Every structure is written in C-alpha cells, then in structure tokens.
Image (cartoon, rainbow, N blue to C red; front, side):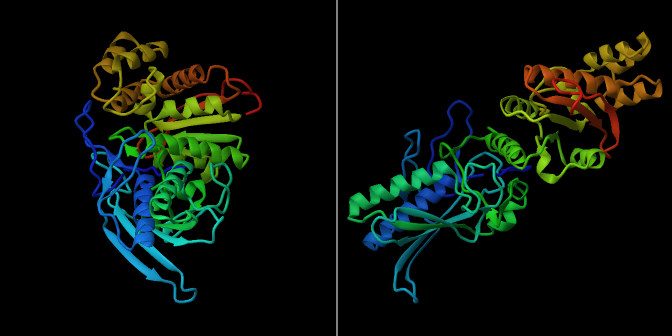
Length: 391
C-alpha cells in the first residue's frame, strides 16, 4: 500500500546522514515519523516529559532523531483517561514526495493490561475498504512494518519507564485527506486519507520505490476484485483512452508512469488473463526498443530504431533517412503517416513482443495501444501471448 503521484515525501526535524553515493539528502517515511511521534507521546504519558528530539531505531539499524513540531498532554473528560500527542513534520530529503511537509501526529492512550497495542486511524489517515492489500478491510491504513516499529518502541519505552505497553495509538495527518487525492489511495480503496508507510524508514531520493510499490498494490487489489483485464498506462490521457476502448473500471487501471518493467515483472509473478499497455507513442517506442524504464533521463527515443521499423513497414530509403533524422518521435510518426507507413502499429507490435519477453511465458495475453497527446490511438496491435484466444 503506497502513495504515488507526480510527486511523493518525509519529515522536518529528522537528522539523517547524506547519501554518500549520490550526494542527495535522504528523508524519512511516514512510518518512521509515526513511530517517533508515538515514542515521544508514550514517553510523555509515563513521565510527563516529551523527549525532544526523540530518537528511534530503524529496521536497518539507523538511529535518526526527530524534532517535535507539536506536543500535548490531556485527559478525556468522559473517561478520565490520560493521553499524550506528539507530532512530527515529514521531510522527504531531496526526494519529491506529495507527503513532504505533512504533520504526522500520534496520540497515545493507555489500555488495560493484556490489551496489547491497538491502532486507530485519526483524521487524515485512511481506512482499508477493499481486499488485496496487506491489511484487512476495515483496518487503518498503517502498514505492517510501521506497526511493528511502533510496537517495538512502545515496548522499549514501557520497559524503561515502568509501563505495561498496552496502548491505543491513533495516527493522524494534518490535511491528509486532501493530500491523499494526489495518491493511489482512492483507487486502491483506501479512503479518508494517507497511508502510513515504509519498510526501512528511509526515503531514498528519486528511488521511485513508492510508485513501484503502488503499482504492485494496484495489481493486488485488481486481482482480489476479480479483474481479468488490467491496463498499464503512462498517464491520465492513456487511462482515458483505455476506458473508452475497453470500458475498464478504475481499479483495473495501473498508473505505471515510466515503470513499464515494474508492471510486467509483477504481473509475471501475479498473472492476470489480459494486460493492455497504453501510452504515448514516443514512450512506447522505448519499450519497443527494449527499455523497461521509460523516463527521459534514463532512456531516449531511438530514431535509428524507428527508421528500421519504418523500413519493415515499407518505407523507402529516403523516408527511412527522414525518420532517422526527425527531431522527435512524433515527427517520425507523422512522416510515416503521410506515406501510409504504419509506424504506430509497428511500434505497438514490437512493444507487445518485448512485454511478452519480460513475462517469460506467464499466462498473460498482451496488447498495446500507442496514443498521441490528445489520446487518439495512433498505433495498435492484436492481442498475443498465452491464452490470447480467450482474452
């Protein structure tokens, strides 16, 4: 379960080491922030004092410290039970992150001995409403690793200050419901706000791991809903195209962005009967040429490759030469269209074949749609692969 969008984030006040191999500053996940906030709040509940900064231990042994952005001790007027709240601002370091700057709060209340640690979703934290995620329907969207981290730190605080470790932790995120609209959460059936995430506690700048994790959770949710036809799309324009072409529901759409390889490799391990890949002509020409990462900084449109395909489609030497020298992939496509050379269809077919190669015989039939910026289909190919006749 993960947030993803055009951008994604971590927490202000954390003191992390620079990533020496990149020179970029790492950040901290929402799970790390929630753990630090819960640790500070439970410490205050037992001692009356908030540790500031509060230090936690992450799964790989790092020990970052977090400055508190909010703290409060109180008593429930109805029950007389005491509670403590601490808040930490998420800092994504040098990674773009839609949750960067969000205030993550944890409110801790003691429970009767033997209750264990109970998690609640406060304002701005989502609730799971669909199967297929690593949490049951109805559970707060606090992922397994952050839950484990919080349990471990609560136990440590209890041992240090004489508590039982039986607590209710309510995690909330200021403006989280609004921020979540820019994430995958609504499509995954996580309603009401953000997810509390992280497997290591660290946000690696530009790792794009959150986006790839969202792709995987999207496949899981679609399979759990019984979807037999999914579509990996490079953006909103291609999503609209596949909906118009096939009438697919929202939970069958995978916002793969540039990560075609992430979709194909996960579907290889978790197959569905049919996968449509839909995206801009230029991006899918990269897939056709064998690139699984379609980002402009990591792969380029190969006009020589397009010229070779154009020749396969009947282009003469003059046209092939013009394609090889074209400024953009779209310009190459237009040159071929003017001479009735089906470059779009050729790219679609080659991209499909590359996808089938990555799938390695998994029982998945594949077709590809290439679109222009307006969403008009400029290239398509037949469904092929295992079970294509039934797809």
